[in-house]
Length: 223
Image (spheres, rainbow, N blue to C red):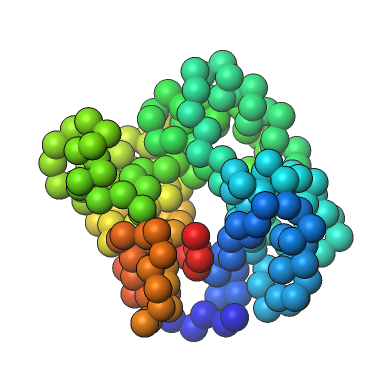
């Protein structure tokens, strides 16, 4: 899949073929490998999440990197005490991964950056899940207020704490891109769907072109 949309003026210069990230949301590594083999050279970047991790995801990541030359985004959304986060990230830093997600709380971000050390692993902070809306935040007793304002402020704090980028809905991408703290940082947007397609379990979505024009550097098309 070739993406030719013009990025926002302040977005990072990412090769068009690397903008698209395809999630391998399968219960086991064999199914994920079969999908990657089917897509072949059309896709260079894959996301491996918790479901796949339980089914051999780290082994799949290693195979896709070493044997197929793919880039891997490990979507773990780590959240724990600082020592645990730092140790977990230290254990992952030599896998050759491109991206790793952690929750956007500043202490989590700082610990992940410390664990990453001098490796090329980029730490991406989760702001507010794209599957959530204001009603979901109310049910979880999250602070009142506009969901966009909360997302942008979480992004600002995470970036100030040292995150290499953030995960956010494309609806917040433009406002995050305008933050001084976002200069030179990545914005990766899930919740991206082709025009007219089913939104699935996502609530704050945009089309690929809209997300890129809003300031996204990478888009996750799928879950």
